[in-house]
Length: 130
Image (cartoon, rainbow, N blue to C red; front, side):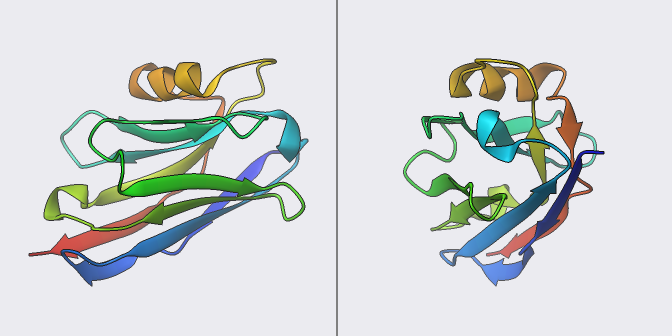
């Protein structure tokens, strides 16, 4: 059974940083694409960042240069380092995983904007105050 558990959310002031973590279990973590998406109530989900099994990454334009996605295959953990946070980054952040073979990070990012990946966690709330 695939499980994704996010942590690390919180409230910070604009310009601050947060590091989100996602502990994964129930599948071969190192073999698959993973990503982060965010959602604000009443708005469409937004794919934020994705990373493939080779460590290649893809980012939404809104976070490029500020967010960094990474993975530790030994710990089955996905990370999202978020720097220079802005009030518009306020959202629930979700970790997602796809079990498709050979999916690229670019494809995963696009899918998160459309129908989502195969699995996602329950989310962690990020609130940025101005």
